[in-house]
Image (cartoon, rainbow, N blue to C red; front, side, top):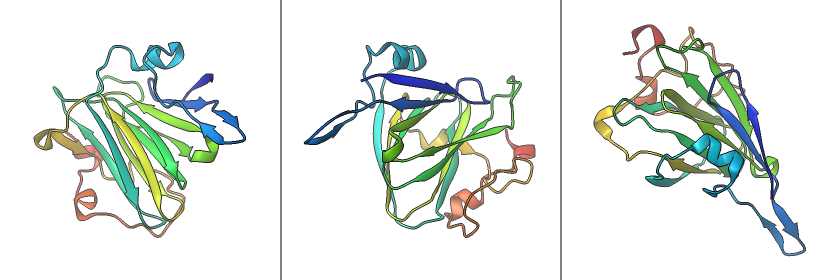
Length: 182
């Protein structure tokens, strides 16, 4: 089982393409193995503090753009295990040459891929099918008091969401715009 790492336009954000083992019984996909050289070079010595499952029922739903502030900033490894999503990372690292820029990766079980999002980048996604499920691996514990992000409809970001009918939480609709991001 090999892994291919594809860089994006944002330093540190990578698409990971897995080569699963398949036979007449089905498929086995290794999402994370600490000794796997290509993946361990990205994940480095970060701990795994959480593994979460997200289920989203309706097509067009947007979750994001979320992250945690220092000192609890976190890296994430996200894999879609059911459905299809338009996954987005926004660079919010003030010292980064790509601050305020975004990149996208289409994630689905058929593509056998994941996205790695480093500390300082916000994450969000839009479902492209009903009944999507994602597995998140986090390098930090969840701390409500340091949650932050940016508004996914911010015209300064100009994210080209694929589905115009957007379902969003009130919390996500009230995230700050980039020009007022702290």
